[in-house]
Image 1: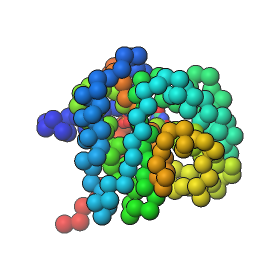
Image 2: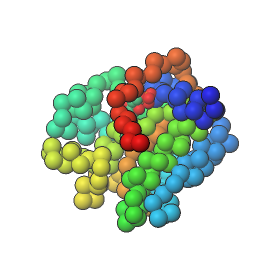
Image 3: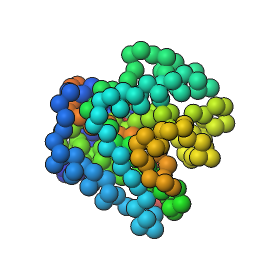
Image 4: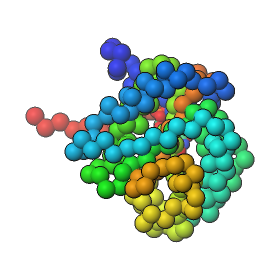
Length: 203
Ligand SMILES: Cc1cc2nc3c(=O)[nH]c(=O)nc-3n(C[C@H](O)[C@H](O)[C@H](O)COP(=O)(O)O)c2cc1C
């Protein structure tokens, strides 16, 4: 099997990390892989906020969970209430990915960058996880309709006051999600079964 296919298939969402920080050279290469993703109109409409400060990572977790508790969907609200959940799973590096709102396809482009980041991390045997829940630090959907669109679009720029500024996210950019990175503390994570009934051929 090619190394690329092996890396794609062996990557798992890692939710247990060692506390040692990953090496700067590894991080630089992983982010560089992100910015080599394709983008609509070649806009490259992304910004990466790399957070390696445990106090700030814990603060984002705590504030996000407070908003999750208020979410009008039970499983999210229950996750917010859980003492066991740290939304970043104890990872020593968290990258918040923000998209330039007036670009052609910023959410899609940032998603492509994230996938490159996850695969680059796996190629160094570094654990990673895509963290959609990070968005609750920035936005606080007050009703079910807002929650429906929550992960797709911005909610009319209704950011939690101070949250975007705290992370120095540039003007005109919207934080979409985060990625965690760290050396793996769990091994042999089972692969969630992939659906196989998702292809049709027309020849
Ligand atoms: C858009 C998106 C958001 C996600 N958000 C979270 C999250 O907040 N927390 C988490 O632990 N995993 C999150 N995941 C990881 C998925 O749960 C995981 O990819 C899925 O269960 C399949 O497992 P695998 O990544 O090991 O193949 C997210 C994945 C995606 C694509």
